[in-house]
Image (cartoon, rainbow, N blue to C red; front, side, top):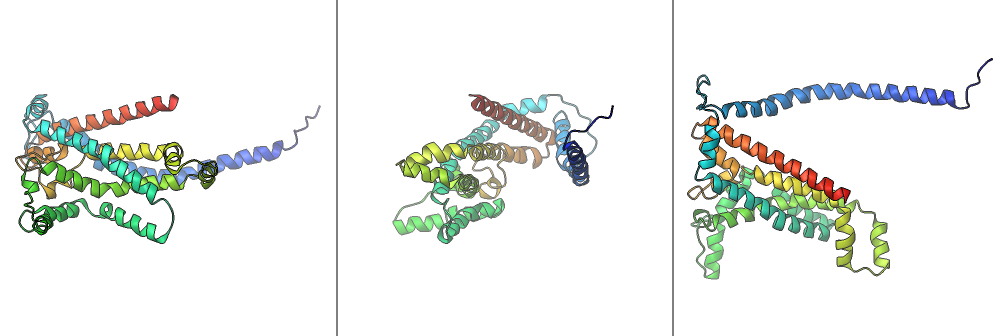
Length: 310
């Protein structure tokens, strides 16, 4: 007895074969680009991380064979170092300022500048320009601004009849001065992330809320902010990890001074590990920083997962 194929079964088979062919075909450029990327990532990221972890168990100055095994002594020296606690505290201050000042400022500017017009586009560019500036250049510019003898700050103080302090040479003022620079430098980046999220909100939703008589601040609180949750999640993650890895801005601005009071974890690693040719000590700091970043990433993911389930 001859079986009769169902109508359209031939077309479905052809479509399935064509889809499998296109999937296999798309693997070719993927493999071509994936292999070089993996090689570069392994050479410039994975291998240095492995080397740093190995160095942390040895007392080594960077020259000659690595033979002086010291176990966990480098980690103990890091934790007992009198300036390590200051570096950790400053890094946590940067995290707090980023989350409590920088991101709310970026959100406020994003809400104010989410519309499309030429003047608003100019303002966005103006606020985003500091992020485009290299960290070293930004640090040098603000070092001149804060200079107690020839900088802009004492000029402003003289015009107001006020004696301005040497902020980069004062243990009390140096951290607030650096926090101001960090906020100025990076809030434009987060602002653009929020603007992208706000512009993705369908205009019909906002118009419907306005027709229902919802006030502007209620639209922002109950519609706009909840609908850009993914942008906020990304921005918060970037702010935390970036704060923990802050380096390029501190070195030209204060170089960790005065008296090592403005070090972050990475500048502490650079000052007491690399510059003093104690690569084992520096490797221990880098491993601790890596563990801290991994813990933050995993904890952040777990918290977000719980919030999404609820």
